[in-house]
Image (cartoon, rainbow, N blue to C red):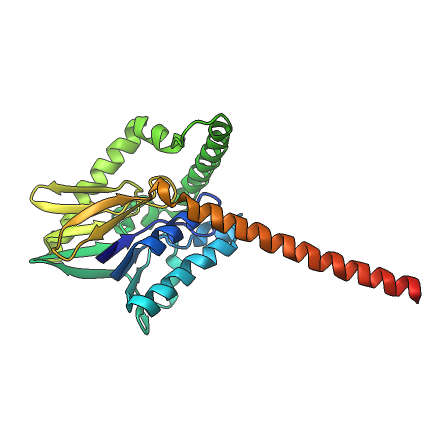
Length: 280
């Protein structure tokens, strides 16, 4: 599919829970005129601690460069709380890519204010050490979710988001989401916009709240979702499809072949060294 606009957020590249392969596959099958990366694309917090940058994390950015080359896609990267290291360079523009704090998009006869959403998270903005403590707990929850689904997969059971299920049953989490939605729509009114597009809370949604349109692109850790706009100005939440799993299998097979090739090269080098040692 080719859309006018695609909005994705909260990929958290650099963490073990990031579904980088899936989002890269999604962008391979879905192109757009304008791609908005709405914050927490790179998880700087985790990379400073126990995170690790993988080959498939780099492939995500390569897929964006291919989209720019093939479709002349405009890319807007908005800073989130986990990629707050961008504060040192924004606003920044290079070719089709711009990095900034927020953005206003025109869709049909409406205007939407686009921002990551941590601006209304008092814990994140004012008490960052508490937010990072909570981030450790959430990282553990994602680790547990991965182990649980490995167990289910071995028994032929479908994927189940244990972390989402736990959060949906915690009253404080439900209350926080509702409060977040009601608070952040006020920002759209301040900006004289008809609605707001955000991320941050990992809960995809499109709803009308007191006459203001609220849209959330979800995340690529649990829900694997994005917001898309067609050329008539209609917005939808779309999810990563299981029929794209072949791309992931193919990529993993390619990585395995690369590792095998490297092992062969190292083995040949070791044999050559031993030959020289013996003959010497």
